Length: 66
Ligand SMILES: [Zn+2]
Image 1 (tube, rainbow, N blue to C red):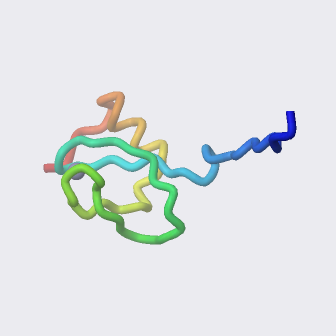
Image 2 (cartoon, rainbow, N blue to C red; image 1 turned 180 degrees about the vertical axis):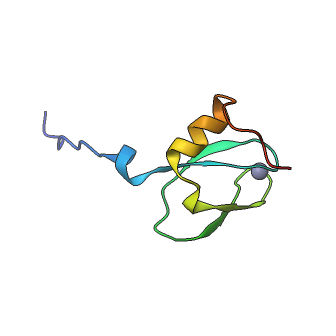
């Protein structure tokens, strides 16, 4: 009824990140930058990894760097 129709386009703001340390995948919505900490293990993850790359990781199309 009186609620605002908030169509939040979080998909555009969020960035899918992949942690090479624990293989955790999450959507990062911070405004920064170059690095962020993995919410699961605290490993430093590059924000600039890119969504396509992260999806490739998830699909096993890209070898995991160890
Ligand atoms: Zn991690």
